[in-house]
Amino acid sequence: MDETIIEIPQPDAQEGWQPPTLTQNPDAKPRDSQRVSDVFFIQYVICLLLITAFFTARCFAPEYTADAAQAFLAHTHAPDAPPAAALLSQLQ
Image (cartoon, rainbow, N blue to C red; front, side):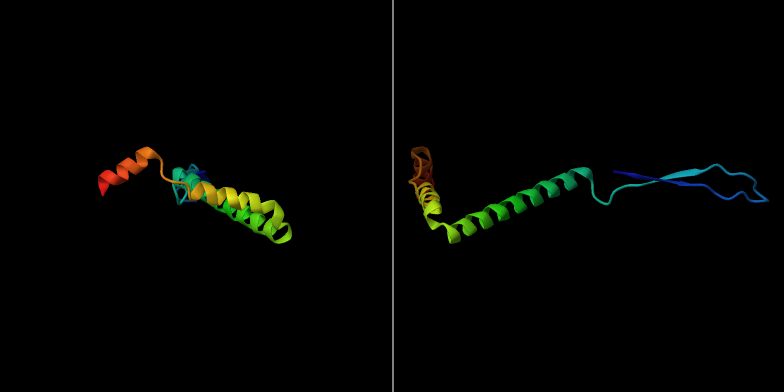
């Protein structure tokens, strides 16, 4: 948010009364880049919290996390979908 500064000059004997001056101090970063960095930071914190929670649960109750680990392995080691396999074969 832009900051507005109001400067009120002291009356001078030679120049007399002078009107106040308004100056704006814009933010160092544009608003869009602030929003992007905020979203990235929030995603980073959530990711760290999820990883910490998973490994804490794995240390104290490994039987609860065994199913989640097996599901993760099954989904990450699944074979390629047929369209992706066809595209890869054409690229080779």
